[in-house]
Length: 285
Image 1: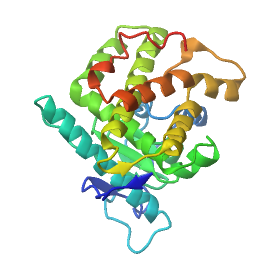
Image 2: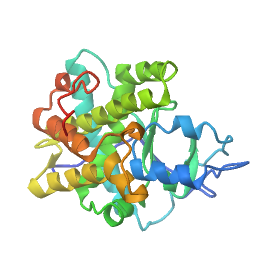
Image 3: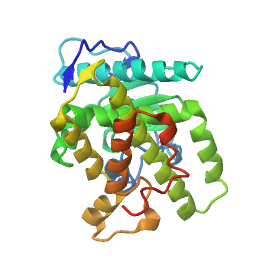
Image 4: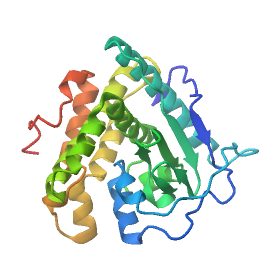
């Protein structure tokens, strides 16, 4: 993955140097639940995070002096800037304005509009404050635990979370939240799967439009992103963690589905082809 200019975003809230990191007051999240979020990645954490106590305010002052993960921070800021350029253009083509989200970098834990963000949760989008949260050590986890190294694998993860922000702006999240109140947990899981697959599709759409503009991709770059998408499918994670696959408990889609929708977005770049809720073209995957 090679940058073509690669400007940095102005919408980064760098909390890596914050003292205490906004640790939770009065309790925390069960380790089993946290582990599930870590492995699944990228979902809406508000349902679980809102069960925690309010967190302390966190300083938003940027860390002083060089940091060990400064290269990762610079990379993340550049990816965010690229998503801003692409989605601003795509929204303008639809006659609307793209509200740029803030990306929060932190270490260990920090406060969010959805509760306390913790390192173990992996990157996530909080629809309540419309911010993306990421502990940059996740990049090491992506390479080590999920065997998905490479810059474009990391960029895919960020683009997926930005995809949720796009869904928020399009009113898609509001509609799915309304369905949550009307459905059983099993039925809503199916809706959640479709929401996540669309975020994968939007990540592919970003890459399609960014190619040749803010970045240059080759086959190995694309393969690294596909490896990441494949590694975090529900079926693969369930098989590795509990030795069996339970489709009714899926919330993000199978590995094959996640790869399919990312590839479709990457190939077409066409928002009109990303209705994962009504399409069943991936049903046999």
